[in-house]
Each structure stands twice: as structure tokens, then as C-alpha cells.
Length: 327
View (cartoon, helix red, strand yellow):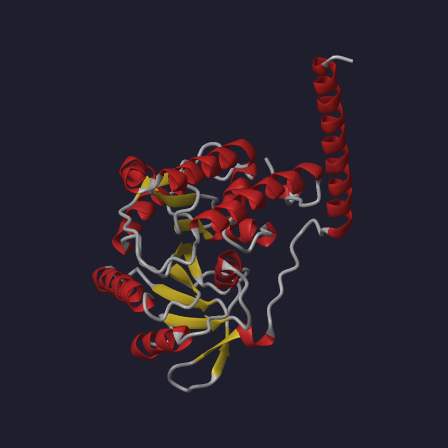
């Protein structure tokens, strides 16, 4: 047998083995995975501390009718140092809007994702200063990951529109106005309609590439290729932590989202596109802030693995979407 025939035979056996392995993994996932997420919420996570009475008050539900204009969800894990800068800018903007527009109302929900430092204490000081009608602290019993923290914050929100914003303050909060303008065009500011406006750093990519090492640039492009191949094709920046959803969209997306770690943005947008929810990407101002929890190699590797499994699980039906929302 020639070398060429040996190579062809090896490729044939290799392909067969991979195909067999995918079938086995698919069967295991199909048997061991629930089609819809089981959302765990501990009793302590169902309420917040009232800054006036010092008693615990129950959070409302995303399924309730909205009672204010905007809910801002801030996931925070060990963010006692960076959180004050972000909240100062955020609340200064929201308060100026409230004073200028009588119809504008808001709340900020800081979700401490099982923080080990003084994140809860820092956030609670803002609740005391502004009152718990404006600032509430949701302290998770254990670390769930950014996606899990965002989901529970969303499920506790009162707003017609819901924005999640990173605790590092990397995105300038006044750029919310850009997302708000986009939302007006997408759905006429009707929270009962589906629409998502997301912040994007894609316009900064050339400048960022010039400042990165070749290895980090390679990882970034590799991740973008995997996102385009397996999940989301029309969005250039899936990972910017500045996304605005109507209440209707939030109800549909977070009810079926499984991923609770870094790749949750990809699944969120994958679900939204599967539901044909209108999505617009808006350029925002962004500055890299020291103290990121992402480690370049391992975090990108984990996200790459997760997004391939997102595609695979939906492809084999291990994870499912609500049929009534798929057009």
C-alpha cells in the first residue's frame, strides 16, 4: 500500500471517528441537558435591603407590568474599586435626565455576583444616598458568572426598557442616548414590541489592533471567526457590555438563555436573531479600564468552546427555543 493510500485511509478513519464521537456527544447532551434552563434563585436573592427601614423588600418580576422608564442592570464581581466611578457617571446622567424630563424615571440594580470584597457595601451606600426606589442591590449568594448576574437583574427589573452596563465604566454612560435613539427607530419606543440596540466597539478595532500583541490579535480574530461561523453573522461586536432591550425582548431572550459565563452575549444575540428580533449596532465611546477579569488566552479559549457548544446544542435540539416566538 502506498503512502498516499495510507494517508487516505487514515483520513477516512479519522473522519469516521470524529463523526462517531459527535453522535455519542450529541446523544449524551440530548439525554443529560434540559431544553430550557432551570433558573435557580435562592431565597436571599428574592429581596433587597430598603435603605430607609433597613428591612428586606421583595423584588418585582419581569413578568409584571413596567412601572418606570429605564432599568440599568450592573453586574459586578469584586468591583469595589471600579464600581464608584461607573455609578457616579451613570447616576449623574440619569439624575440630569430625570430633572430635565418629567416623564423620565429610572432604577439602577447592582448585581453583586458573589463578590468577595466590599462590592455590596459600596453599592448599598448609593442606595442610601439616592434611595432604593432608584438604586437597589441584588447580592447573589454564589458566583454565577456575568450572564447569570445579568439575567437575575433583568428578572428583577421594573423598566419599560432594560440596559445592562459593565461595572468598569469602560463605555461612557451618556452614550445611552444613542441607543435610546436607535430604539425609537426600531420600535417607536414601544416596550411591548421587540427590539435590541447594542453598543459596539467595532469602529475602534483598527486602533485597538495596533496596540495589541500579535498573539492577542490572533485570538481576537479567531474568536470573531468562530462567532460568525457558529452563532451570529450580522453583528461585528457581540461582547460590548452595553446592550438595551425592550421589556418584551428581555422576557423572551432571558427565559431561554442557558450560558451564564462570558459567552452569554453570543447566545443572547443568537436567540434574538432566531426570534427575528430587530437588532441595531451603535458605535459607542469605549476606553479599556485596568482590572479586567478576562485573561486573554484562557477566557477566549473558554468562550470559543462555549459558542461551539451553543451552536451544537441548538442544532441537535438539546437546547430549544419557544416555538411561539420563532417567526
